[in-house]
Amino acid sequence: MPRLTVVSTRDYRQHVLHIEERGNGTCSVVVHPPSRLGRPRQVTPVGEGALLIDLVNQAKAEIDEVMGPKPVPRRPMLRRRTF
Image 1 (cartoon, rainbow, N blue to C red):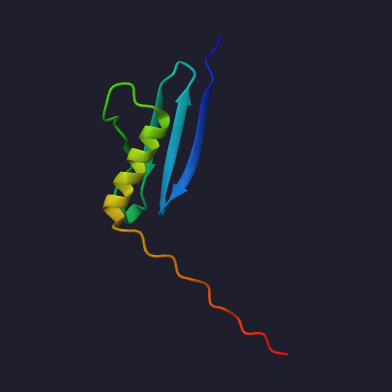
Image 2 (image 1 turned 180 degrees about the vertical axis):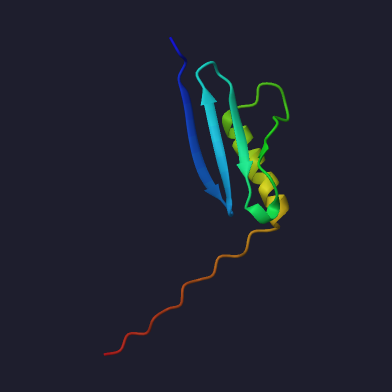
């Protein structure tokens, strides 16, 4: 009987995270940057027994390092009511 494999994608700061979790307890995260920033790369776990959330957070940290600090969100302009 084949093992279940779950694949999902997630957008983060113009990058696409390709997340794959296999039924035997292994997982992988591949970062697909925009074409101007290079080729896809697989995130290698820092420690032994890294969890999926650790790999996703590590991928986000690498993206933040490349893209620089996040811009401050702008406040929406208040609209004046005319009566």
